[in-house]
Length: 111
Image (cartoon, rainbow, N blue to C red; front, side, top):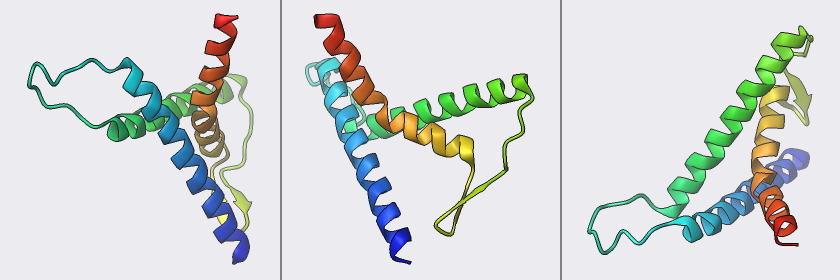
């Protein structure tokens, strides 16, 4: 039981950190719409939509690769009593670390 709470807490922390970094990056790209007077969505909602969009794109790409290679993957994996789909977990993990990888790439471009 404690294992589930710890894993859940770690996943929640990773999601929060990833969304926070995405929000920070979106603020730099955002135009000033206040002068126009149009409504706009919040940086948090954009960051969450971006997180899910990236994870979905990664998932679809991995599914195409697995289908093309005709590889056999288990339908689910048991982790601490939780039943998870392997490709979905990989997709979420890659989507969570994506903004930090983008920071590294941007740092390399400046060198």
